[in-house]
Length: 488
Image (tube, rainbow, N blue to C red; front, side):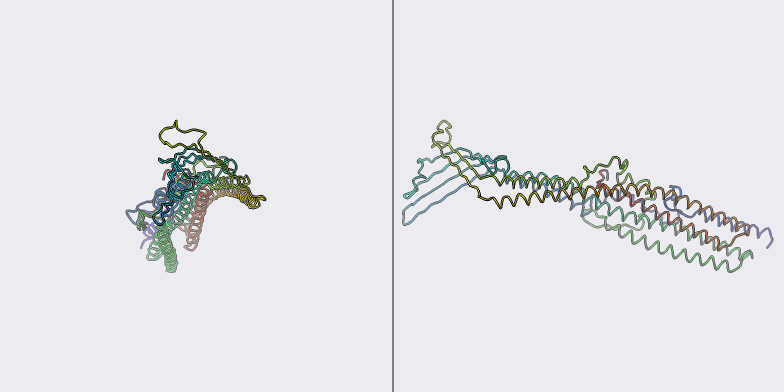
């Protein structure tokens, strides 16, 4: 072979080296740096973005549906509490017959309407007869009708069991809404972290696939150089070893991608049926620029953060409101029980003019423990529970505030680190290209080229690692703020 042909062959080999260097995929660079070789992935792939994935999770995941049951429970609890104020009908019938004698036949009915305070309106009718009827139960032949009111003058006037139950149920319904948001946020946070792992595995697969292709191109170039006598046979052995190493890395990356894809499938359900992702589905590439929009954390800053609107704090405050109602009810138990009632009576139900205030039934009852030890103990226990909840609220508020501050600092630091690793990758690539040029001039070796390429791989993986840490920090911010994206 002539010197000219050898030079041409040598030049083609170097050109193939340069092409292989420039085609190494580098994760977490700008969008143009993230474009993989068209032949590195399965053809006709489908991209599932983080927003689309979280949309499926929010709509179909069983735990999210279970979180909706918490709100339903609050609604049912409120409905139950309102039942304490439902009007009610009471009927009492007693009769005794013995050896052909009617001792008594007593029929009494009442319609009662409880109100918010300790006042109850009532209307009733009674009809009694019999040989041995109690004289006090004697009524006209057509019966006796009454309309009146009963009033709690001590316990139960300003707060009673019905009022306390309803007020606590209203607070509990609001509390379940905050708890629902916390549960949904936790599920979305877990799903987001798994998506990041899947995305990282996909990026590593692309990286090692391209690296393997570069090593194969290099091996073919070395073999041609050996054939024309420009390189020693040992160089082809070294190049073949590099190909085997790159192949091992690529096989491990493929296994990791399959495992993460299956882990991601744990969060995918449609109409109660679990769904497994197909092999052709891949994550979006430019995830760093889309993460804020997907999690709806755009514009979030430490200056705008307010702990009062946090769902966890809202739920704890609503729980304290329920404990305060309990405390008020226990304090009300210290008052004596005084119940007064008055019923105007008439033999004719339909004629209001027949009701005479002088014809009535009235009564008053009074009771009160002498030492009130049980009541005072219940009140003290209620105060202790309320105080304990206050301390818990203070500690939780401080913990959330400090956690959010730390996460904002993390995001700022990892953003800087991501820029630094990007520069390191660019410099490593430049060093590899320079080594290729020296190899062209005969001043370098295949060993140095492989060493430079290894440094490029290490810096690329480091950049991917830092990028995932940045993504996880933003996901933790999403979790710490307990947000529930509305546009999924």
